[in-house]
Length: 331
Image (cartoon, rainbow, N blue to C red; front, side, top):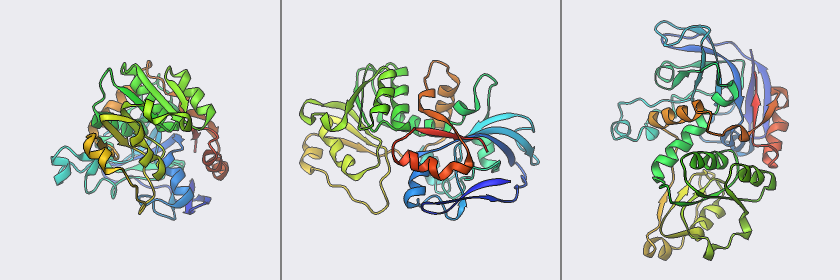
């Protein structure tokens, strides 16, 4: 089968690899939609500690089961949507309602959705793979994984209906946060960024959009600030916009080894809560599935069209330049 392999940062290769055979409880899925992702962009640009190289690339997907191992929960021909990981449900973190921190969740994840076929391990097929209704397109269904990350973040921050929320970074996740918060009835949502086309999309979602460096810190005291850029200087600047007693959600991951400085007086005496949601557990996946199935939740705004695997390098270069938001590969 054809598969997109990340050889090293900045180097992608479309190669022929063996089609995997599903073992007991496992499934072989023909990938129908595989969206690009900010994590994959980071891996392409600089590498990523959770994405080995060289290796088949991609982790968001939806598709059709074409083969099932003994005892697998789905049959050949079923359309499915899922995420690329599942917790063990037996370790310390799983037993303490922190499935996202499961000691095995990263080691047992599946990568390789930028390929014609993807083998789904048994524990993922059992916990985090679902039937795809016919009325839900493969593109929308393939957004389950990033939406699960959003669901985990919203659960952690405990947003209230009257909270004033600032989202810094109008990328795919930032715009998903905006869409979900609006669907939850949060009336005062602002998206700040530098990309005028993405800010226009935010406005179309019914939220306020502002140019980041035109946002005055002293007058912008939000109850919750959600950082979605993964840039150290924006992590530090996020505290400038939150009110006393407010919450700063450091969602965007920075490069390993980077450090950020905060004003300790502000954090302590203004009682600022800092949190950094990572990944998701099964509860967040199920919440995300409800959003995918709800036609009232707007998601199409993050999809920028189809691209071919052969053009993958130019796709990621476009994303690096802020051209488009999420492209769909159809291996």
